[in-house]
Every structure is written in C-alpha cells, then in structure tokens.
Image (cartoon, rainbow, N blue to C red; front, side):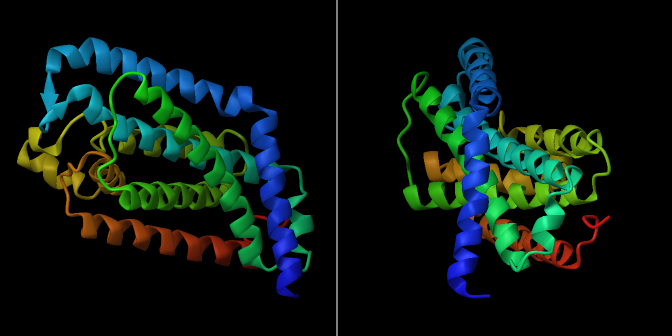
Length: 257
C-alpha cells in the first residue's frame, strides 16, 4: 500500500477521533476542568495556605505539574480505552483489520486521537492553574517532550486495556484499581523526601513518579529524580507498550470474533 494512502487512512482516523472529542466536549473537556479547579481550590488555597512551601516553592505552585500530568494521563488513557473498546464492541474495528491499512497506521491513528484529548485537557488545566498561581516554565523542551511522551504512553496503555476488555465494566478496572493509586502515590501532592526510606524505595518502582517529577523539573526546575533516568524509563515503557499494541493489532488477538 502506498504511503499516500497510508497517510489518508491515518488522517481519517485522527479526524474521526478529534471530531468525537469535540462533539461531546461537555463530557471530554468540561468535567476534568471542573475537577482540577476543585483540586486547586481545596488543596492549593485551603490546605496549601497551611502547608506553606514544599521543596522550596509555594505549595500551590508545587502541585501544578502533578495536576496537569494527572489530567493528561487520565484523559489520554480514558479516551483510548473508551473509543477503541467502542469500536471493538460495535464490530467496526474488524473493518479496519481487513482493510489494506497496516497495523502501525491503525495504532498511530487511535493513539494520536487519544493524545489530542489528553493534551487539550492538559492545556485547559494549565490555563486554569494560571488563575491561581504564576507559572514560569523552567525548560520548555523538557516540559513539552514529557507531556507528549506521557500522553503517548497512556494512550498505548489504554489500547491494551481495550483489547483485552470483554465488557464495559472491564475498562474501568485498571483506571480504578491501578492507575488512580499510582497517580496519587506518584508525588502529585508531596515531595518524596517527606517519606520514610522504605516508602521512598517503593516509589522508585512507580513509573508515574518519574513522569511527574520530570514534568515538575520542566516547569519548576525541581525534581526528586535524575532527569536522564526519568526519560529512559518513560521511553522504555513507550517502546514496550507500542510493540505490544502493534503485535496485538497485527495478530487480531482479542479483536477478531
């Protein structure tokens, strides 16, 4: 199949996903914005005023990177798992599988669409954060690259969840019992230096901990981890999940009736 036709297929998938996001913006954009506003009000203003500073910066400013990352992670993952499982449940994913489109075009199209939602919501949350505190980006390239890699990583994770899910209840298990605990234990609201040594060691096995700290370094120049190590871990997970998604779609495992 020619590269021109692959490009048309890719653009069509992305356009479909973006139109879906914008068509139901009241469900995809507004709820996360309201939720994050409440986080800023409750944790930033009310609790933050009593905490004072964290890691040398105002507490409100400290939690901004974590809350932005939280919105990118949950929305990239949520968009992919709902959209791809919907295509699987409605049986129209089978039309893509028997089409001339290569597996990598199908994966790239859905992943890009999910990334768009994650980054859109992340941008909205960033604008909301500016209403509560001053944000000056310490390193723009790190900030943008971590945001892009993170949205890609959890879009891929959402695709794997959707492929193995057998019913709608299955797509809520991972976000509820795995993703949410890892996010809250990833240093969104605290510095790892506050934890006992045992829990610091445990946190070292949480990939989201590295993501949040890398993004915090990009925004504030503060991090509990080495940035190079954080990038290696993020890129490693992206590579592993991308390989898994390509193999699953190529073989049709969990997708063909």
